[in-house]
Structure formats: C-alpha cells, structure tokens
Image (cartoon, rainbow, N blue to C red; front, top):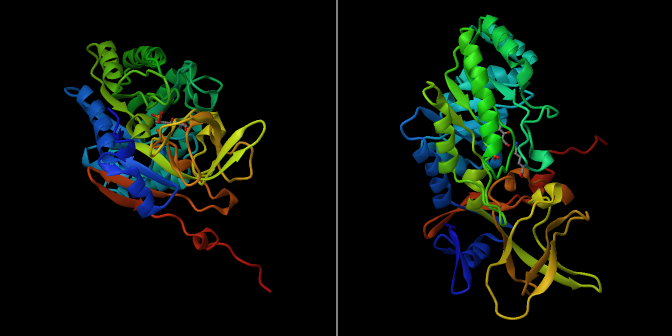
Length: 415
Ligand SMILES: Cc1ncc(COP(=O)(O)O)c(C=O)c1O
Ligand SMILES: N[C@@H](CCCC[NH3+])C(=O)O
C-alpha cells in the first residue's frame, strides 16, 4: 500500500499535503515516509521469524541518519562499504556488532577501524584482502570475523551496470576458486571464518537468479563442511527489486519463504542486505516547473531538479514515474521533464503526458533509494533538502546546502 496518495486531487505523503512541504522547505526536496520504511523492514523481519537472522540494511541506498535511526530502532543491522557509512551508522544509534563490511577496496584504515569498533564480519572479496585483514588483525592482537563474498556467475537479469554476480564483474571470489580460498583462510590464525556471502545485483524482479545463486552457495557450504570448515551464516546480499513502472517483483515474504525451504535442516543463520526494497518507495522528490518550452519537435518541462539531484534516469536510463502534486482536469501534453544542468542527459523522464503550467509542482516517485545519496554539486548546485514524514508531522532531516558551503573548502593561490 502506497503512503503517497491523492485526496481531493492533492498528493499527500502519509497525512501531510505535499504542497505544504514544498511551501515550508522549498524545492527540490526529498520526502521520506517513516511508515513505509518501517513496513518494508518488518516484512523482512516477519518472514524471518523463528530462524536466526540479521537484516543488514544497505546504507548506500539512502544513508540519511534519520533513516538509519528508524531502522536501528527496529533492530536492523547495516551493510556498509566505507568508513563514512560506518560513522553514520554509529551516529544514528546502530550497533557495531550488527554491521557487515562489504566492498572490493577496503583500505588499511577501513579494516583497522572496523576491527576496533568490532563489526559483525568482513565480507571479503579477494585473497589479497584476506592477507591484509590477517596482517592488521595480527598487529592489533585481534581475531577478525570473516565471510567470503562468492561470485557465483549467475545472471541477475538486471541492468548491466547494477549486475554484480557474473564472473566478468569485479565483485567477489570466483566460485571455482572459493573452496581453496576458504582452505587458505582457515590457515590464517587471526581470522575466524563465520559465513558465506553473495550479492548478485540490484533491482532483481524474479526469484530464479537468487535461488540459482543460493543453490551454488549451499553446494559449496556442504563441500566445506566435509573438509571441516563450518559456516555459521549465509548472507544473500540485497537486490530484491521494487515497482517503478509495471514490474511485479516478488515480495520479501515470498523470497524468504523460498530461501528457507531450500535450507532444509542445515543449521545456518540468515543474513540479508536489502537497500532498495526498504527505501525506494518510501521516497519522492518534489520539484517545481520553471519553464514550459514548446518547440516544433518536442515539448520540454524544465524543472528545478536535475541530474545532479537524481542521476538514475541519466545513468541507467531508469524509468521513474512523474506525477503532479495537484491533479488537474483537461488536456494533457507530452513533455520531456528536464533539469537546468548543461548536459543532454539531464532528464528525469521522457514523453510524459501531463497537464501542467509553469510554477506547478511535480514529484518523481520511488526516489528514496539511490536518489539523494548519488547527488552531486555539478554546475555548483546545492544538494536538495531532505524531510521525513511521520503521520501528520514533517521533520527536516537534512537542510538544503547553502551556496557558500559549496566552495568553503577551496583555496585561492597566495598572491
Ligand atoms: C554488497 C551489497 N549489498 C547490498 C546491496 C543493496 O542492494 P539493493 O539496494 O539492490 O537491495 C548492494 C547494492 O547493490 C551491494 O553492493
Ligand atoms: N545505484 C543503482 C543501484 C546500485 C546498487 C549498488 N550495488 C541504482 O540506482 O539503481
């Protein structure tokens, strides 16, 4: 059930009129629904009841500390890929021992700090990374909990830029080498093998790639067991898709049920790293129409949000729904919805049928995941404000960037 609904032709976020949010905070502004975040997280939690588990929200999807705090209060763990994300999680009240640390390029500093705070485990992506963790753990007199991220060579059937589980992708350890890498890890005295991990891609809309990967990992787990290497947890990463247009992705409930059925009597705790599923449809981006430009070939609605605010359409040709904040009767016209940035790829949507005038407000839907977090200051544009709605209340969760702050850390040459 969407938390963004029309009442008398006015768009509401939970019980707050989106027009009022725009009046109070200006545009462009990201709006998140606390209710939707909680509902999505709980759907994972409920499906995992009765089995040992950890749901590690993928911080990269939306790292606002208010979002992290809502999830931490529900008992979430966190999947991080940088020290910045680690600091955010701790600042938001997340527990270090519920953090899994992913990523192909963990630095010495990353590893030292993660060992210091005591993360749940490192998802290790190469043999050289194992060696680095071993060395640092030995120097610090610690035992590092590790899981190997396996690249199972499964086609996630998603956009090639967000597919991560094929052998030509940079991620994980080739499944063909995994057994010997585990055997090697078992010889390293400052490592403790905890788990097995994979993440095959993002915005998956069918179960079969997940289940193919799972089957391959279970086979490997059994082989390892026969060699005396015990795996305590199985981490299947994130990747569950959401509806942007007419996709019909499986629900967390169906996905987890299918996973649990395949585990049979294996004594494995389950870890998941959902990002998009939790936050994509919890968010919208409000923008205002600055100009309507009609040419002989095309009509453009030039809005005040741009590719620097929301890069998914420009980067992946992603289709995101665009709706008016106030629905009007009458003739609709086809528009390309474009931003003010000087790039032809600066569009939020193409050929959208809308009845709009200059000054009207629009929203880009499903913008909670990989929206603000991927925004930039290109064209020296300050990043948008972020707010969170909770019932009939709206709270600022990040102020709009001031223009002075954009060059505050730059220096002139000495005269
Ligand atoms: C290692 C890892 N875990 C989890 C995620 C979250 O993915 P999603 O937002 O598709 O759930 C990602 C991003 O794709 C990732 O790289
Ligand atoms: N940024 C991508 C998802 C990448 C997931 C990160 N591994 C998107 O917007 O769809």
